[in-house]
Length: 130
Image 1: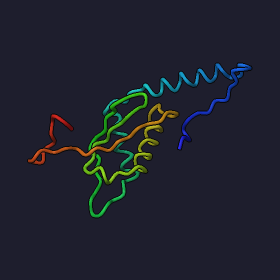
Image 2: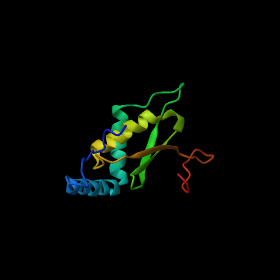
Image 3: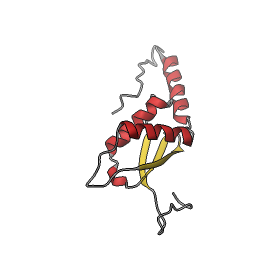
Image 4: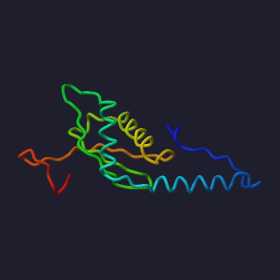
């Protein structure tokens, strides 16, 4: 579950590896503070979807519209989709791993949420709230 996380061994008693542990903590803080541009993020989302399409559920076709980073520490992403039920935890893990490969998030936890895009009555996206 935490295969991406670094492990640091140290001893406060002998001061073994304390500097390395502090450097690792600073590196993790920098990684978790990184912000991805929306355009760059959406290119990775599009490539990821073409590599591994979400499972189709009962005649419905999963579709991702766009994604945005909504927070840091931990990096949090919201992917707007046609139907949230079609995107499970395993696909969220896949997307998080793809983001770790493409952006400098190699050793920090990522949060990926799938949110249904709201539509107005005429079928056009609601501009006030995505």
